[in-house]
Length: 574
Image (cartoon, rainbow, N blue to C red; front, side, top):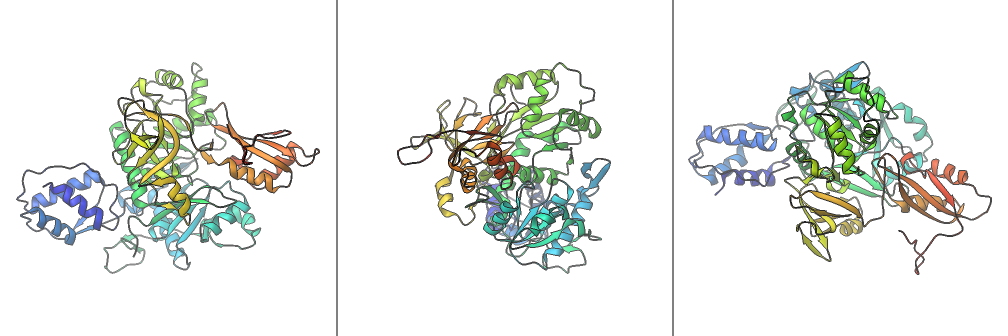
């Protein structure tokens, strides 16, 4: 019988924040486990799976069954892999955020997070929304909510008043953590939520960890909030329908931790042998933003804030100034780098090691050119969905040149198959819908069982994306089944934009679609049949601008006499 397999199974079932367990097993030939072997075994689990154990008492364990029972009685997790990651004092002296000339430490952010936790003591409701721009305050607010045992509901800072109001109602969030620059937005609401302004939150003086059941000193935190389990909702994320019926994804700590574990396993960042520093060109409030923040906070990496809008000059300048090693975001940076190959770079970018992107494809030939032009830098695309926690595949390092057109390989916790005509297979080059199963798959859509059942069948998440696997298990994407637009890293559902346009009273009919742009993303476009011939493109665009987040707004509107429909009256989409 496998000793570690039993212990891992036990932790999976019993520990309050046990997450990201590998299915790998490790055989121990010495079954006469004395206390020293017991300790070595537990430390091995720590290193392999990222747990932190407090060993209360060491006892001789002579057989596997005794070991399992002893672990059950004597082990306690010191902290959650995701929920309490910010409270790791080993990282407190490290820089978390570079913002201009300011360098903000993990300790500073942790103390502010604990102040958020204290502020929430006076608030009711399990769900707490976050409406903040990228930065240290976002991280503090997010982790303050999680440490308090609540469920965080990050909202895009680009949403309009109507969209925020709709989200708060559909997500049952009565409290919003925000900043005073958003006050005018909330003042316009018919029903104003409870607000906690990060501008007014003062960091606590000290944070002292205590064991469960111990005496709490001022500033102490509970190890595991009562009733909070690894499969309790940790994060809510809206994927569509912000002005109508929402699809709000529920992710647990186990979901996110599984993705974090797979990412660290595949990317092997520790092997770089340098201080890891990121530029993130994506909203912290997005699913990938939440995920990569979880990686960064857990490992104590640093993030450099860059000004908006993104420019290649500012990107290169930040790499030199902060010795950036990793870029993660949309394809714009990679596309601009490729367009400027051969031109002199007036900055030292030799610290850069990896440029990873998602949401849009970049031709393999472009990635090959970049790899050859930037010696020592890896360029690769990942793939995922919010519903998958969000990571499904990542580049396997080092990434072979002939695989650069792929989306990488599935993590060790993910089972990925291709389904066609109801048959799932991993046969190389068989095309069909990408379906996945694993501990990363969402708990479901909040208060939307019908959509959950449509997306997940017998534990398999149906992605709506077409693809195939090659002989080595690398995934290649080749189209979509579902009708979506990928705009600047966000998923946009055309039906939501069409609903908005039709609500204006300006249109007789409307069809919305995506058009590729020069940055590897897509632009939202709309063909509109006007009710009145005097209705202009500007009228439609102004209406959308007042009601939709910037990334959802149509960039091109064409007036037309008719849109193609099916026999049942539905829009016929390409």
